[in-house]
Length: 262
Image 1 (cartoon, one colour):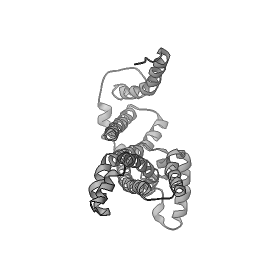
Image 2 (tube, helix red, strand yellow):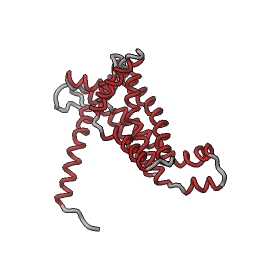
Image 3 (spheres, one colour):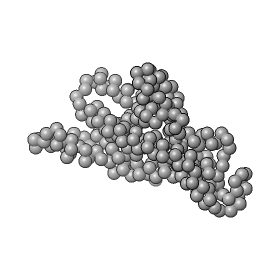
């Protein structure tokens, strides 16, 4: 096995340190007894205790959870159906290329552009109905619009790895389309669907830009709360909250990686 050049190894270590040392520092300061400054005053979990007694933070956490769960469920259903339709329907080459482009657009378009477009779209919808005032509904719709693409891409990659042989064998055994979907395709797609759903949930949980542009006064999420709190000054409670959000994200990413590997 060929060894890496020491310079490449050193660069990789510096890059990892640059990425993870700030995250480790946040976790360390979340258990630091001092309220201000960088001096270490001893280990404490008081900031986590106070965090769970803060009604504003609990409300923001509940909004984040509702937003992530609802948008993920809807996006997973739509993304799975979209992936199956794109991969198994006999589209022409030109139509297939166009659909691929449309599927990748929400992934590559900058969030700020996407959020500005949503503001315009919701402004037009408010002319038709007052339901589209800034708030949780707009946030759910906004998150679904970019989550669908990520779910569809993950599920579609699973469809490509499965191939068509099993489906053709089921057809040869006179399986109907509903039976094929329910008993053959969906069981094989479960790892991809779960991985796509976990990715969508993580993206929704951590999203700031789209949430910022579509949120209302009663729909503040954890990223929005952290942003507003940091502008007033970083406190140990913010460190504790950031650590918990990071831990939840890491757990979801590890779970997604396990399902994707399977």
